[in-house]
Image 1 (cartoon, rainbow, N blue to C red):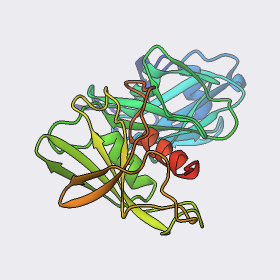
Image 2: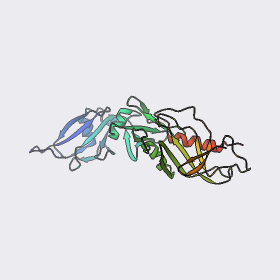
Image 3: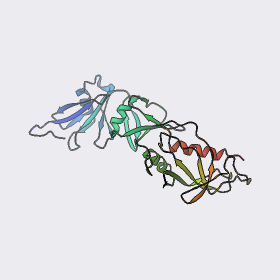
Image 4: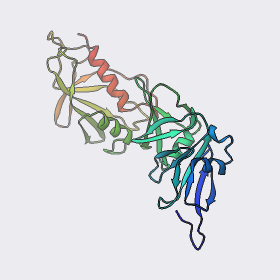
Length: 283
């Protein structure tokens, strides 16, 4: 962006790895990647990278001899760091890069430009998602592209479902209803597929009741509709009690939750427990 007044020069803000920006001014609106690196005292130049931080938050590599136009894009921001490669990752649906294998939660938050009431979570295949603190250091050199999601930090009040639970259910294609009855909030997973050939039906609605204080407090049992019997005609163990909720009679699956990690576990955890219980059901 051209500077204000009669100054014909062109400013750019160049950051170090801690994202500390310093203003530099160029006479020519078109600068090379190596000029940006030299302006940041990056020596030797060929051991450094210049990465433009675009107004929408995405990153763009600037090659050493590539001309980068400072005009018409808004406040220019460039990251210069010493490295021989870049590490790619995602925050929500945004593709980002970082010139080091390790990155702190604090820097991730700055890159994502998160409001104070949002947290970052790291998706870990086959495991529970990990909440990222500012002081955490993440290795971006792990196998595959690292993925992070940003979620509002809130608990359930009334019929409100925490944002991270909504994101999980929507992203994984679950159809669900949030039902408030009295002081109880219920999440109904609609037509959940059951283990093939195991029960008298192929799919069932599953009810999860959220306790006061959720997600800091754990849901306990879950409920099925219609009532499920095994293919043999027998009723699964600890599934004989009925429970009425939202105008329907549900089959209670007495599967108690003795392990819960506030700030980590949520409906993602509960759905995994439900699927395990259904798969392991015995008479």
